Image (cartoon, rainbow, N blue to C red):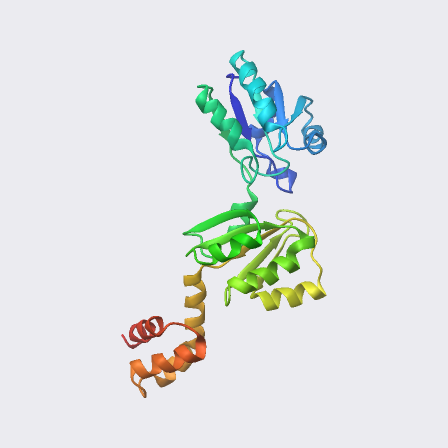
Length: 268
């Protein structure tokens, strides 16, 4: 095995998702850096591997990176793993990668499961442009609402109600998907607006790991335009496009220009 840092993706729920290359890498490296030694030790027991584990997280990164770099210069090989999924996604792994770059130490990634991408795929929201912003924070929501892309957030079950109430303040009329327990037995995708989701959760309290996927403004606008389509089809030949656009704009909250352009496309 070449002396370098191996960034190894681990399963996010279903242990069968662990790649053979990932297993082989953990079996061959000298030391494994992990978020929680208890979690990683269980994973290693499952694949029949025993290794030295070192806790690498926000609290330890700064103090242990110099030692890691020095030992890699002496041909000690390391693997970096997270508790679940792909390292560096909402964790401090990037600090170690930057240190490797500065010290000309080679590194590579062993691809695998990633809850952000899997949730996006399961949500049915637009995938051509998306932004991941880690755990939901109230102070970020207003800024995020102005970005024309699908928004992806992490959240915990005990905060989901409050977060949906906050999302409702800034993401009016957006379609939202709650994706939870990805790849596990109780995997679930719930989609609707904030009111629908809050009502659903009131009757069916959520458990487990949650990813929130919020539709883009354009996607939300297009969805609302198509809701108006039957009415537009009925009136487009009876009322001028300008007048119909003005009426429907007041009714729907959509801009007159977007409705006008939509009507013109339907006429063609």
